[in-house]
Image (cartoon, rainbow, N blue to C red; front, side, top):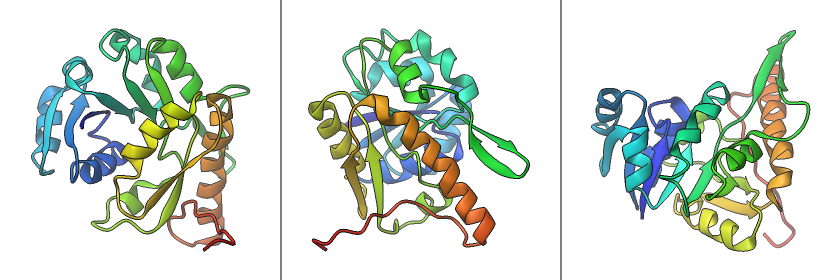
Length: 208
């Protein structure tokens, strides 16, 4: 599959692009196409382009821009029409040494769905620190995926699950995205307060 990583020159975007490129064709999208091309040269199977070109040529997209830049993606609505879009975006802030969820209601994923009304939006990779994805072999982890239909979840899960050791789990409709994004703050605080190094989500099951 041809997948655009919008914001692929950032830490989480670059890490996701690195692993997706092992089994997909990846287009790293950046506001600066020269920067995108430079990042793509470091990843086998990837090419670089500006946001518009990446969105137009891809079959699906992963959005990995900072929350502050989310609204700028409305210009991609037509180019991403009819396509799956996975949001990694977490609206966070730091107060008194703690990382907090920055929204009073809703979520970044729901805002993205409003900006891209003809796309199928899901969450993914929200609780995964870039350091854990930058490794050549990913540690076993679970990625929560919220999507308004099971079909959209299945599409997103196929992409997310193409990375070895990552298990996608359906978290319900996109209205649950705020809980997933807020959990990122909890995970970051756990790592910081307990000095554990990077943490991510992994759920135990009696079936295992």
